[in-house]
Image (cartoon, rainbow, N blue to C red; front, side, top):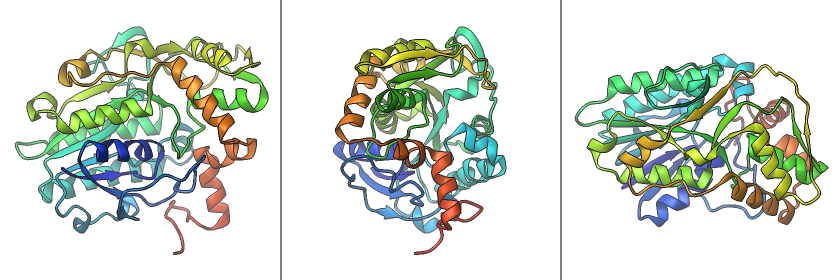
Length: 341
């Protein structure tokens, strides 16, 4: 297939593009480049594509496209809370507009990167795709709205799929340090401490970036009847872990690191465990293979090998800090559109 991959220069897109290409698909990237230079280690090879803001996509970008994988978003809860109007502008309105243009262009399959955060404060029981949605952030709320609108667009010729990713982890050449495992490993490598700013009891489902890529590949190739207008949680029950359990894996992965749990009760009420049976039934060729333990080891080795610095960890690889820095430098405007050549 000829696949348009939005967010191709992001944390997940940089991992996903070569997976799709290796499977024989022709990948066309689309990315505004906001985080293109957030690279740790060797620079990745990007697919050919369009240096375009998601809000500026036109019919010409969808000509000849068979399928769309839509990853591009403001993908950080603190950022979404700081600028909720931009979150809805980009994550909701621009995403639905992209889907409508794709449908008009004759695109058959539209894979949407949603999130398990839509379940919010769901408690200790395993939640399925039929569970009530309780988004507690603008980011998660935008994902719910897009899913609702895409369902209305679904018909015999246009087949959307909603892949609700668990919280991502793992190394990508375009790193993110503001997601829980990546963050804890970074602090451990740089400071020798694994700092948990809570009591450690909230549940989180985690999934490796490579497993997300494999899930999207499987959904891209799946029979229509298996995935049409379906929500699928992406991950594995083995990676339903508490924040304290995540931190303990980091302690074991980073030599000399010590665990510090503050016992605070923060403002984030999310706690949820997720059932992943539906994706195994719909996509029998998919299996999430990466454990939290393996991911912690991978990250620690990559951070040490590539000389991660505290400055880059806190500024370059943290989405909110990076965008604030770029706004101050004038390379993006107040609406987060790139400025200049």
